[in-house]
Length: 286
Image 1 (cartoon, rainbow, N blue to C red):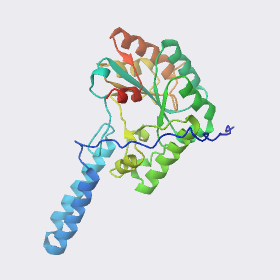
Image 2 (cartoon, rainbow, N blue to C red):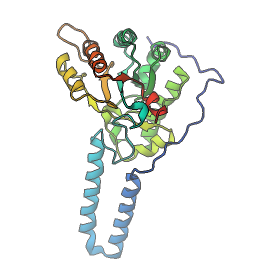
Image 3 (cartoon, rainbow, N blue to C red):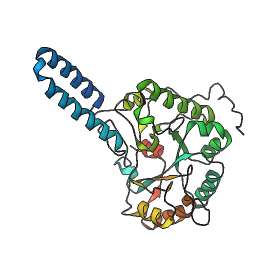
Image 4 (cartoon, rainbow, N blue to C red):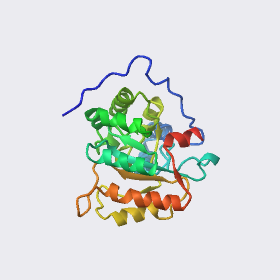
């Protein structure tokens, strides 16, 4: 059953957003738009050249499509694949947990994090947060960060038009602010897939795109050892790790893989002298 949601009291609303600096990153949308304008003009001026303009346009489409299918790409705009390279993050890594909250798995994950004294970043799906508002608030109450992972987490997200993208992002943003009283600062696209139209939407909501350094594929891999190896291979400072509390695969004995994997990840990180921080803490230190 869906729990009732209380509105954020007046005075608890998040402050006005601060715009992210975008210097040093190509604006793929502007470049793509300029190319299409040039192609149309070129065909109008010299109609016989249309095959060349068409070929160039096809190459342009292929390039931006490939970039959108590569979750760790920064071609379409700024994208965190590591924590910022600043002194404060020199011995830090971030644990990010996607697709929740889940009424069975998330409470166990929170207990495990408490036991090890770890702070994590939860990328929550808006409609799941609305379904489990108390659990969403508990994530924040226990010292973790809740960030935007779209409202419905549809795998068609990467082919949506600007209006549909904005609707998905805004619905999740409003829901998470309403539930926690905190404005999400980061966004992760469903499955990490996106298109060239997403970055302007994120700018409008003052959100920074985040991918990952290492992922365990723990939504489809039932062997905890394989997931652990993927996460710990060449583990280093400033890595961003990705696991899932929602849609989590289960081991042969029925335990969510994330619960089997995290203790060994925490122990390995501590052995390397690494400490876990949230993405917000990493940004504050940027």
